[in-house]
Image 1 (cartoon, rainbow, N blue to C red):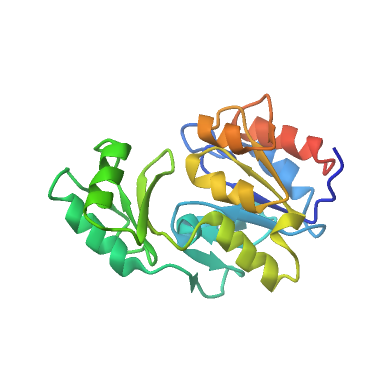
Image 2 (image 1 turned 90 degrees about the vertical axis):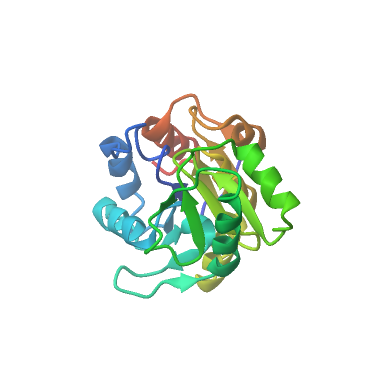
Length: 228
């Protein structure tokens, strides 16, 4: 398979990290080999300050996708560009309180979505929102929390936005991930790679599933792409 990679978009938690969310330092070393060669975009469901700090510690690129595509940032000291509307997400969270125990996470920091502790069934939550007429939002599982997200945004659409700003196409990118919230990211990219510990739905949509988990899988993916 021949694919000319002009950029890499990669999930953080569960992909670059171990299950306990500690960074795989070998994967970080591998990514650093791409510095000043091609754009590297970190994509996460987490908040901006987490994403940009992680990007700075990794030391490859300051370009990040945060809040599952609802926020993007190009520079560490730059501004958050908000692509999602948090208002409907907040209304949906209030509605879910009629049926489930709802605990918001990082509410004071999130600008485009609502993050919830995983205290009820995902499909039950989705069904409740559907019956409540909340067609403008979607409930997704990052593997660490639930997220009520503006239905118009995703990691994939954020990659398209970033690519355009960089003078590239999202199809110029390879994407690597592990969770359901990475599906749109892999779909938007020219080639999508799932690590071995990935969600089954992501594996089904990926172009390639590597044999190793988490950061070791990232290294395997970069080797497969001929980048290291």
